[in-house]
Length: 150
Image (cartoon, rainbow, N blue to C red):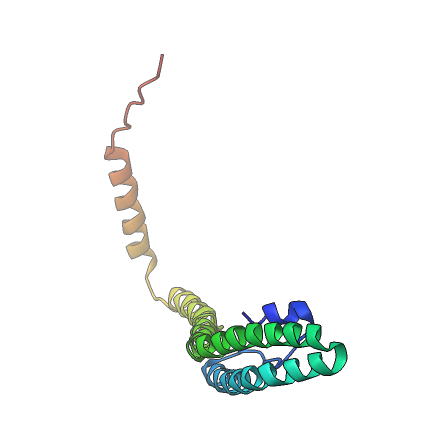
């Protein structure tokens, strides 16, 4: 909706980027205010400049541009009241979920596990019993037969 008036050379209000929920609300409010202001004034300004520059043909042309501006800028401003804050909330959630905190926690867990392994005091006979028990259980398992396809 903001792009349609640009087809006939009206660039209007350029909004700021939405980066978080606060900026989304600010952009929504400014976009609505500028949209309403421009679309109400454009219908008169475009008609007047068209009459001044091209006469009767310019009046028709300016009135058409003003009506397009009225509908598109009003619609963009009104929809922006909902979409820009939602876009800001989405970006805030995305930033919260993609922080480096999760990888730092995982790294800390790995370091803790390594420390526990290094500082674990198991005597040699206990470790040997564990290995012997594992090997005996492994020897008792029977291998499964694999059916060949023909």
